[in-house]
Image 1 (cartoon, rainbow, N blue to C red):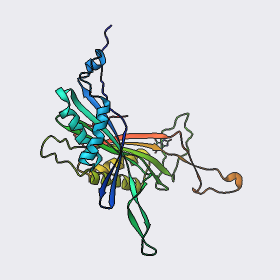
Image 2: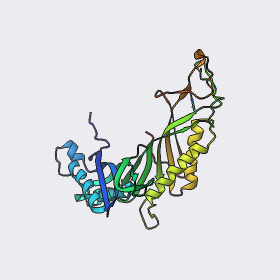
Image 3: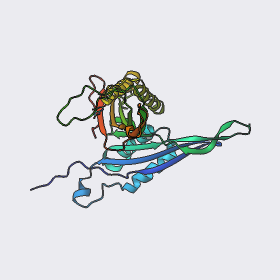
Image 4: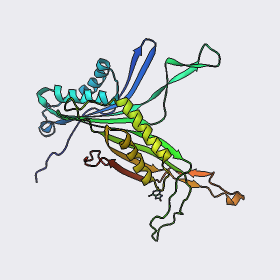
Length: 305
Ligand SMILES: O=c1[nH]c(=O)c2[nH]c(=O)[nH]c2[nH]1
């Protein structure tokens, strides 16, 4: 029986790159993890041993670093678009049909240190502390005609200490969960959002990627904080809806929300009443709530993982 080579792609994954922009003595930092995947005419490489159409992964790695020097890094999305376009349009004989660039971005804050004036602190120009919070993500695909940009974040940990209930659910012979009328709601947000931007023509002006990221993040957090929740599913929907209501450049939001359970500790054995004050923060297992909210008429593009 004949076998068929199916979908394939290759490139250098996880190129860790720190780019320092030196503006006199005030420096700016971008800290990225860049992964390149090329798709195209690579049958011979797999089937015949001919590498004539194979751009080495090593070259794709070098391109990432050279582009960081040559073009700077204004935003993860902008940098990914430059790279994707380059691999498709400048690789010999058109062997690369499409390119996918994935970037994770780690953020750093300036360290504020004691200044000359007593009791005051000032930003240092060149000292940074890694912001332990979320990782910013983007995935850009370019096929020679249009871009598809899906940005996001992961590891954004949030908690509401009230305004969360969960009751009235289905009960079967295995249901033991007590109904909750005032519980902790905590999750570690993974969010991805797709842009309407396609980059085909002049009307498709790219959004200000960094501003857009900050605003989407803000709306996700505000929706989490301000939704009186009867389930994490309802909170998920509120978060997605809030982003679509406020950010015209976004067409679709996909959320993965683990329910980080907080169980009340039984303090009765010690003669103490636990009035929703002492919890055991469970690490796992966890409920996993996932869903997409998108504009009507838009076909969702963010893959379900
Ligand atoms: O917000 C919740 N949604 C669920 O589907 C669920 N299931 C569960 O056991 N606890 C919760 N909480």
